[in-house]
Image 1 (tube, rainbow, N blue to C red):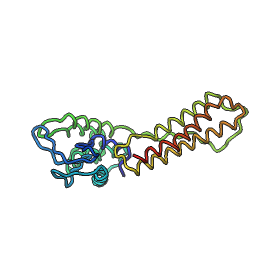
Image 2: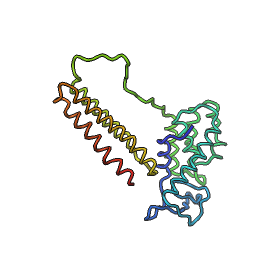
Image 3: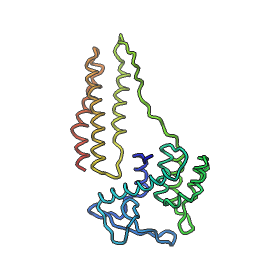
Image 4: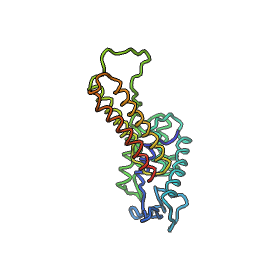
Length: 259
């Protein structure tokens, strides 16, 4: 398995981009928790080979983050012997990224999980919140969030009905039906524009391509509306579809590619 986009964004959010400099780069930092110094860390929680005085550009931080994540993805794939859904996998990669592969490998959490007791495994997350024998609020919150994700069912994608036996209607769609279709198209646009903690050019380009696809569907919706006899009722749909297509194809992708 591989980490989902949602899982990647979640871990990036947990870690944060710390000790950023005015030019967008970042430098290594070392925090003290409950009287104990933590590892030297940089960027989005990276610790491998990090030392005092190290400075990375944002691009280097993003690249190192993805590289370290791959190590923990591989570890979860290797250590877990039972089936996982995407949410369970994402939660375990997040846990391993924060606590370490060794912690996961020797944990009761893994033992319960590999024994097939998913409920007992979920209850084990909460115990991994201490530093120097005392709980840390941020770790308590993160473990609770990971446990919640681990127990969350994966929602199946809901696709519109698409029968293959189609008949011509004697009446055009009502204004209510057309409004619902337009609203669905607009919702699709919003869903394809998530926050992107990494902010890489490749992700921006991919988002632009997906948004263009939604814009094209809006344009096609406008053409369909014009084919109806009762065109005054669907003028709003034409404007919405064509407007979305123009806006998304000529403005938003360009703005994303420039960041």
